[in-house]
Length: 108
Image 1 (cartoon, rainbow, N blue to C red):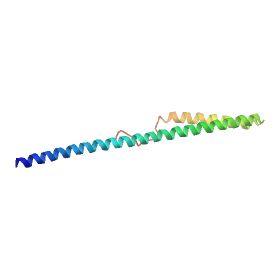
Image 2 (tube, rainbow, N blue to C red; image 1 turned 45 degrees about the vertical axis):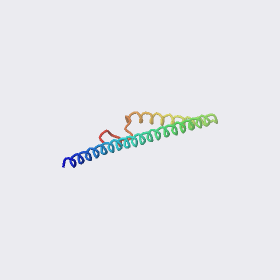
Image 3 (cartoon, one colour; image 1 turned 180 degrees about the horizontal axis):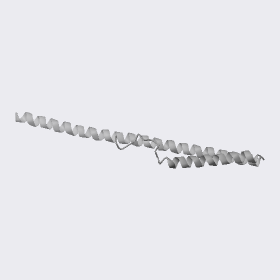
Image 4 (spheres, rainbow, N blue to C red; image 1 turned 90 degrees about the vertical axis):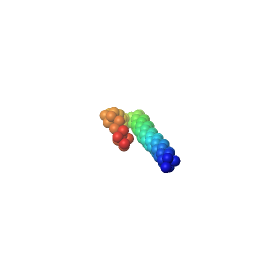
């Protein structure tokens, strides 16, 4: 009987060790997935910012060329509109306080 008890205890200890290892791997996998998702979100925001800055630059250059061609009011309207858009985007990005995605909370 004593041999059976030792064997059962050994099996239970091995099972507990295996469960602990599986939980550790699961936490690590979830952390890696969350990190990859956050990196993807950061990349998307950077890409959108670069596209926005590029578009604004093109519009300002086009507005400058239109002014040079003698259409001052239209060119100025393009440049002023672009400046207003950049200012609104800047204010909106900082007033949100970084609340872009709430899926990644500490509660999970």
